[in-house]
Length: 197
Image (tube, rainbow, N blue to C red):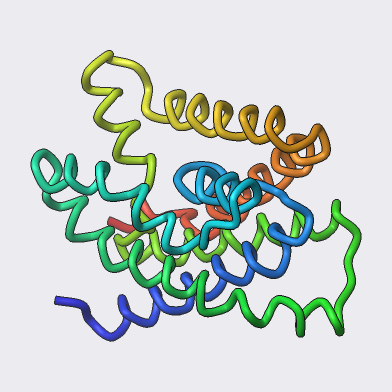
């Protein structure tokens, strides 16, 4: 059962993630890591709805979670569903946002990454997340005895590289900046979590 504080964290985190994606990344075809990155590639190439694609791409991962990582399933399902819905709900306001605010691609990519990283960090502080490739990394880590962080880095690297090949070199460069900014923001938001336990 969701407490009010956790629900507020999911809502606010999801809104930040959606704003970062729809207002700052999508206009310049910038990618994020994980399932969101895959969904962005499919959106840029075929026009698929980002939030719906996140849900569909997450199904196999959540099947694994249900069978092997039940805690992860319960802690991430709400975050994934609400953030995905929020991404598609915020998307129609993209035009209005850019009517009033124009930013260069570099600045937009960094701000987008910071917003997404902050949204993820807020959710992580309340033991929830958007799900995604983190679980896949945990599964592969146990299977091959490789560091989880290294696997996440490799997965994100493959997604960004694929986006760079399929889209453009600018996409690759701006996406790296966005992911670095997001990592810094997430790290800042989750600082002291382990010691607070």
